[in-house]
Image 1 (cartoon, rainbow, N blue to C red):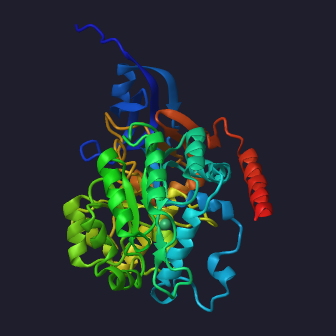
Image 2: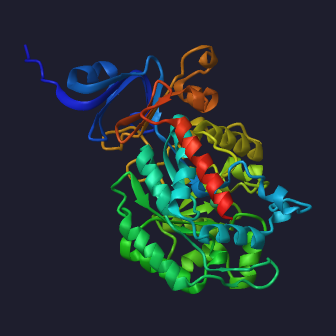
Image 3: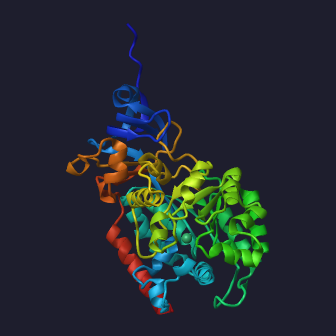
Length: 467
Ligand SMILES: [Zn+2]
């Protein structure tokens, strides 16, 4: 007779239902369990096996709900939520066609974004704007968010730290654009000053990726960057290892307009400055040559695909069929929303949009699998990719419980289908970041959501009065 093995202490033991690990070896466990120590997953397996091995300080029973890796929205302009409930850009501009119609008025789009990012703004305004958005994101199952750029990022850092979401945030760099969209772009802000501010931000914020909130260098668009600015960004990335991302090859007109000015595409120009690599995410990357696909694959660059926000704007985001070309070439593709400031989607909205658009564009019901769509939404790559993307020992304990019980889930043949096809943000019962439960029984823990909204209304009013 062997002596019983003593159980080991752990912080959290999660049991009670299926576990979709998205790990090649562990797969989906019908009655699974996960043990967590110091914010890191230390054990994954059958519930019966883990029960004897661990003595938890805290237990979480999912009551049949499915445990999945936490979701990451890889493209949100959090600062722009300051303008939530303002009329949409195209409606306000009085244009006869949308800003993105006929391949997009790229000069006007870049000017709009570059100006917004360069706007001097007290960080308390972006802090107030980001907090209700981050609360809504946690509630719908996002454990991570990548800010895609905007003014006063320091306020968003504070909001993310307070709300407990994993986040990559940083200064948005651009120094060159056309004021009226017709004349040639020219230098609008001081390049050295912009680089100095970015260097200071990176020094003040973790650039090693070890903390929950990390620094990120955001290139608004190569179209809006001088050679000097791109050189400075490359030096900062090389010196600090800070991850960076850039809006590239977005609309049909983006590439030809960039080529007319610089003789190459936005992606090729980033490559020329040494800015492609495993630490870089190419945002959008919709209009791609075969050479660019090979370039992205060879350099280990990640691509951020935004099916919902970009289909909404008529990018032709699925029609270009870039996603299957990228995944076939081995380029990691991660999903984002890009719907700010008037729309906060949940992770299941992104999964549905990716599945519907990719399958319709390919006219193939197997063009994108539910598992692949889930994997694109759990943040295994991009600026927050280190340590995420699966439930396995050694991975960060960023986890979500989806309440996959009840009539709505009756028809789903397996847990992956239940989560990818049936679930909605309201079905999320628990959101766990770094091993800490931040949403419990569908309620935010220790967060007064109504107060966050009231604070934003006050900040918005104050800003309107200042202008
Ligand atoms: Zn964007």
